[in-house]
Length: 254
Ligand code: NDP
Image (cartoon, rainbow, N blue to C red; front, side, top):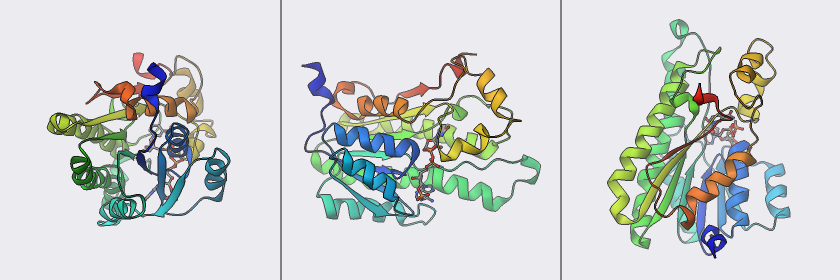
């Protein structure tokens, strides 16, 4: 049965930034498919815990601040210690800070690169050893359409640069580890309604442009990303690696 290929029974998935927004929807989807899910973030979120519990999902929260140099390694180690294995790593945690490049400080540039790029690489690197030991695994990185086009009207050179790096990291790593039965893919969302995009959605100087430049004429919901995430993390996508799957209501068609 083709649907059986979407099942994740017996697998352990770690979702960074799994406490809210897109990460929570992905955690829920992987959990519904049968995986034990570890969600990570700086702070626990009671609403996320309630939602996953209500869905009957086997999950745990691990605190991690990915700005810290050792955090990704410690997070993977803690996941292994609590769950015994790691089959799926979803590098979803990310931050967006806008601003005019002429006044963009080194500190903010570095913070964005640390969370959006450095921590993603560190988590991938840490996950390789257990995945190799287990004979395979799946990594899914959350990039952005902003790694493909420079969406307007907001200025966000650091964010856009970080997401382009995530896409190339995905392809490079996929090529490197494909023969070891480890698949590495990315999703590049367009505007999705979350805490991260809330400021833009509520901004009358930005949102009309966001909407008019999106052929579907609306923002997406986290659940509209989660289904694709489940596909890419499951055996249904067993021949897919190095892909950057765009989910943007058509934004990048223009
Ligand atoms: P949210 O801001 O809603 O959620 C971000 C998640 O990341 C939270 O769980 C947060 O938990 C966690 N996080 C943030 N900073 C850190 C940190 N330093 N260490 C550990 N965890 C952290 O974001 P979205 O759900 O919107 O975004 C998820 C991903 O999707 C990001 O990579 C984003 O760039 C990408 N994306 C989002 C789009 C959108 O329109 N929403 C569009 C394109 C891409 P906590 O605060 O507790 O640490």
